[in-house]
Image 1 (cartoon, rainbow over the protein chains, first blue to last red):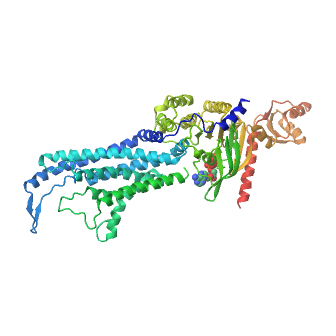
Image 2 (cartoon, rainbow over the protein chains, first blue to last red; image 1 turned 135 degrees about the vertical axis):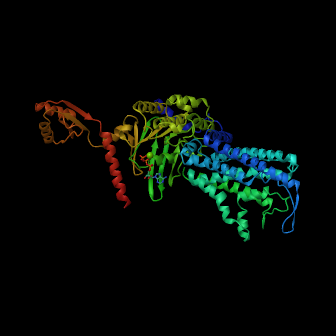
Image 3 (cartoon, rainbow over the protein chains, first blue to last red; image 1 turned 180 degrees about the horizontal axis):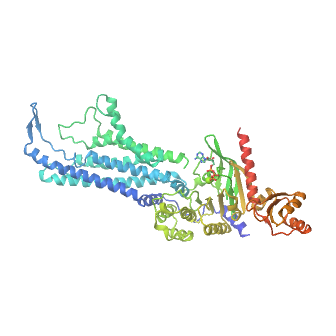
Length: 296
Length: 307
Ligand SMILES: Nc1ncnc2c1ncn2[C@@H]1O[C@H](COP(=O)(O)OP(=O)(O)OP(=O)(O)O)[C@@H](O)[C@H]1O
Ligand SMILES: [Mg+2]
């Protein structure tokens, strides 16, 4: 008879009276534990960060020998008769392009991992059985992913920049952190990483397979833009300006060197920031829709 | 209580679950049986909202499960022991689940203890045996102390001691008034586990009744009889209208499988004909038989219909 009463009770006890209110921060904690408890996450992020800082500082160090020579003879007459004044670009080595690409790659890999790590293992079914409202899970993943990648990329950019400037400080060609150009470059160097992480997450959610998602996001970030090289046609240049790597270059460009140019039809800063924002929004919206609509 | 109403799921032109209407009651262990590919796992995924139904509806305790912001206090599920990221420890895995549902973290230790993984809890799940993963999946299902529990082939990979433990646990959970829905493709597994059966074949409902009712659907019970003078006995039993076959397991000791006569009747016939019996036993294979016959019918029926 106890069976009968419990049957009746379980029908009426919905929703369970003692159930605590659901909170978004609990989902963030879940995602944080998931990310933090995977060795591969830390391996990818720390290797990318260490390699980036190393490349940047080592680049500045290798500049030093030429720098002394150039500073000793700042004006030269080239064979064709033009006069050339030496200008040191304090960002070129300390926030170098190859290094930021490494960080972008690390970010994209982590972003993809947060999705394919769930889908390729079947873990996603366990996750969604615990949290049936999928939107919250995706939002929590995005929050955790962006926090980790932004903090790490900011530390890397700051260490690279300050370390690089300190090394040339004795030559008085360094840039202060209070300089707006420096600040924009650091912001660009930092924020491109979470943007790439979100793009990686999108590919992970679409493809769901580990290797295929990584290959696809690398091809998208670094291979595809190569098809839009040169500046013969305006539309080609304009397509190139839509990629995050190109936007990063636009923002980190050192305008005070008259001998450097951005090529024909350069993009402006606003355009570059909009490219960052656009990819972030597209990635979030599409990942959200795909994860909600498709069978787990 | 789980209510499936006209539930259908198609993958392309393959219908995995076909207009299934079933109520799974609380307070008993309900076995969910069907041959391979009959749609059991798909049905369980539909209950949890992991897959969206093509048509029809399913509710758990009166609500679609996907309407719940958090699930673990409502339904505990072990769908596939492999549905887990191998790179984490069991503790980290269960902790991540517990915090998402605001379940006190002491529950992690409790359920690990309960399933016998307290020692291995800090090791990587990737290194676990199938049985250990199965236990971890059960731990996850128990975490939120839910009124409804779903298990997909939970006995896979468990040792005999583990099988007994799981069966006792299911029965205890049901006695506490919970809904316990357990799938299997082996009747023998359900025989000692479930009180009710839901049987499907090719996504169709075949039976939804108690174990006793189900066993009556199958052909009559078979009787195993062993006698030194097996040939003589076989002739007598055949003359009485029974279907007599040599017991296939061992050719040595004159074993016969008899269908159509009860054990007392066979004993009486032997006694009257002065034949000594070495063994006389009613075989408990009728459930298995009923299952085989009914699902075989369903498969043929569905195949004919599809043409
Ligand atoms: N994601 C999917 N895409 C396409 N077909 C699927 C999918 N999932 C299941 N099916 C098909 O649906 C049918 C039912 O599969 P399901 O896994 O539900 O069977 P099952 O009863 O659990 O079988 P088993 O006893 O082998 O576990 C099968 O024919 C299967 O091929
Ligand atoms: Mg199955």
